[in-house]
Length: 137
Length: 53
Image (cartoon, rainbow over all chains, first blue to last red; front, side, top):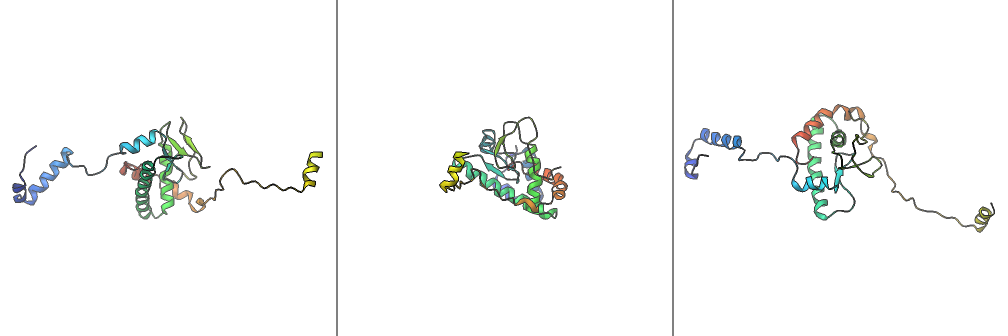
């Protein structure tokens, strides 16, 4: 990549700065969006420590270390934020938007991963589609 | 029969707590047709936020 000193970058015009920024983006040097699950989240999923619930939120399966509990709380706070956004954009309630997402999330669980059945019990995904909330497409 | 009579005559009433938690259903206000309609948008939400799903 072309080396630019800070000084020359400051002097450069806005158009040049834009071009440099675009080049950085194109080469993937700057991460704009988080891509996929964190290694911790991915590991907890495949270990069956966390699972998908019927309400669109992630659940802690049984008793787990504090780090797992905190991670799930953090993920669920972020999920609630995107559900809230989706609900206002689609004139629905947060609960309805979360449930529609749960329909997808439950269907997309991989065999071996945990999901919470409508009766509240934790189950392991098998070959078949897990039970899902009423109204799923 | 005799044992049953003895139980009644003994005047002993046993009340045991249910072994399963009592679940109160709070999802009755979810409109199913709305959930159905939101499917495509939900898919997009998941796609755009892969880190939390």
